[in-house]
Image (cartoon, rainbow, N blue to C red):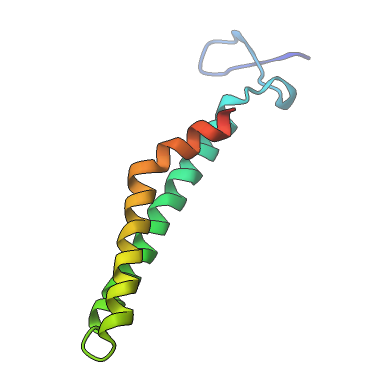
Length: 91
């Protein structure tokens, strides 16, 4: 019983797909998608942190500007060097 019949194809035998014959490429696609989403989430969280630090710049100028600089460096690192992390995973 390696195949089933399809009613729409007029009784033509169509091979079934089994779990043990699945390709790895489907999982790799989901992992790459998850990595992209984590990078996007990182940029969003650090951007919110930068906005909060900018709001507190009146009261704590030194610490706010220091953290703003660090936030911008983290955003730059995620955006500019994110592809290097993907290359390191492939090795």
